[in-house]
Length: 389
Image 1 (cartoon, rainbow, N blue to C red):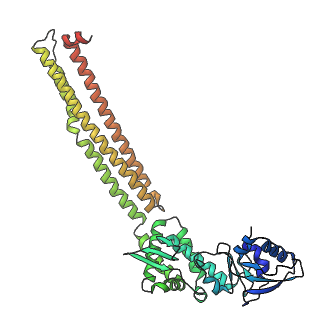
Image 2 (image 1 turned 180 degrees about the vertical axis):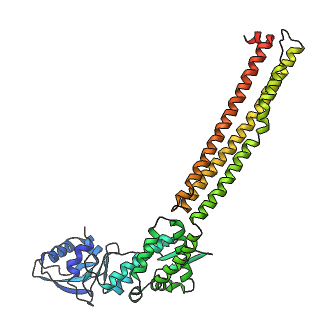
Image 3 (image 1 turned 90 degrees about the vertical axis):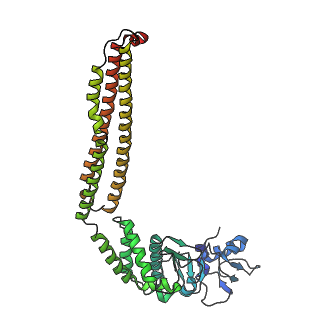
């Protein structure tokens, strides 16, 4: 299998601005190995775009052969006359491919790249930064897609002269901002909004080139927007918001109990009054009927109260879910000042736990009322006692 790097010994001997067919002296083993592979393998010739035209020569060092040089497959790499020629190749402006520049004999894997390549790689860093803050990168159209009052496109199009305007210091600071985890979502949104605002007045095809030269302005406007944003999320504001939320939750928890408070007070009173009316009954007489009505009245009362308690249980559960959701929001918004809200949420969660405990105790009380009433009823109502025991 042939790769782009294996063609470099041949590419490095190519004269600039030469036609498709050239005469090449095999002066070392690297060129010899490459030409032998090309001559013996049709797939290698097809992939590389290099054909050996001297069929009858024995390939060895010192022999001059004739080659036809065409472009290799795009998946292999790009052979370009100069860097401006390379930039014309498809998708080269959004992602670096392996390439060789004939004019300066530079391979993309070599050290000490030309200044144009340094600027180019910095521009690709800008493309990656904008890709992270836009909605998506349309790779086929080579265009960054934002949405602000509709679709907003920034085609990735630039020239050698344009990328020389890039401010590397501003680019480094913008990349640092995009990586920062504090208020990350808000920073990305503010940075995207700043980019769109600066590019919106520029003709579509010139927007990216305009941004390259305006990175200091992008940084300055972003910092102003972020300062305004962060000023609205101070420690005091966090404390105020959590205090308001705490009061709201505590009020809702108190209401959950107060809604059944009257019925709770009625449990011991009603039970005591009802049980005092149960008297011994040895036959199916009037007292038997009275005892039975009282006992079933207690059961109905307890069942209704248990239903109210379960309903309040669901209410408290929904409040608990709201607390968890709000806690996540506070973690995102006030990640730099967790001390402003953590203690308050701990207290709120403790109150919710007490509320659940109170509801459990009420259910236990209801169960005890039913048990005690059943014991009284069975003990004083002999016909029923005899049926079951």
